[in-house]
Structure formats: C-alpha cells, structure tokens
Image (tube, rainbow, N blue to C red):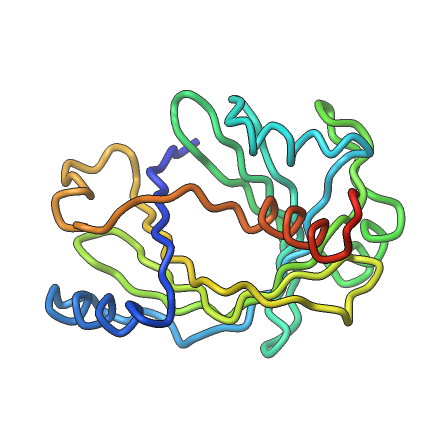
Length: 201
C-alpha cells in the first residue's frame, strides 16, 4: 500500500493562464494528452461518505467508477481512502457488463453497506510532471444526478491536484506558492445539485 500526499488548488479563469506560465517556468512536462473523464460516485442511503468527507472524519472513503468516454470506454472501479497516515487509492478494471450490473444493483461495501450510484461528474483533465510530483488541471467540470444524467450544471472553478508519494524527500510546498483548498468533486456535486434543485438527496 502506497500512501501519497494530495493537495488541491482552486483556480478561476483569471489565474489559470498565470498558473500555466508558472508551470512552464518550472519546466513542468506534459505527460499525457488532455482526456475527458466521467466518474459515477456511489454512496449509501444515509449519504455517509458525503457527510464524513464534509466533516473531515478519518478514516473515510469514496467509491466511484471512472471511464474515458472519448477513448476505448474502459471502466475502472476505484476506492479512495483517507486515513491519518495519508491517502491511497485502489483501482480495478471492470468490463462493460460489470459496469452496468453495478449501476443497476449497487455495490455492497463492508463498512457502508449497499451503495448506489448518486451523481455523475464530468471534466477535462491535463497532466503534468514536476520534480516527481504529478500535477493535473481539471476544467469544464460538470455535475449531474445519476438518474438525470443529461441535466448537467457547470462548476465555475477549475481544480489543480498535486499528487506525490508521501515518502519522497522533496517538500511539495517549497515549489508551490499557491494557497491550498479543500475540494471534493463528489461533495461539490451533492452540494451544488441540492442547491440547484432545492432538494436533498
């Protein structure tokens, strides 16, 4: 199990250009083409994963199925766990039939019980590498209820994620002079959709 540091920076359209210039000045390398990402997030009937994330409770986790609509439609079942030691993610490749089955029947988790699909999050991601840290920029973020998958609302901000293995010697904060923010796409989707629809999941 490999724990990692994961920090997030919230950008708006006004400072994205400055951030990319800063990456260029640090000789950050673009490591993958931009990709369209679609994630379906699961939770139980009490929305415990959402509540625990909002309250900062550890340990906690999120369960999602991620796909890349503009490529080969490969599906990945992912669990992201936050603990006092750090964060880690497990990923399992699943077939399209498994994907459809999980969307229909849900996922039985040993901690959270039966978890059903709640929301869809869709965005474009750019990938960079700087001093052994992976940096991603997520733009055009959109949220939708799972059951109303064609009714997306758009996020006004963009999210930079900085990922580094917790055992690396370099201090990531030495070369990132930007303010950190807590930002969970799943929690943001729940909050924004509830406000937008004047409803509580």
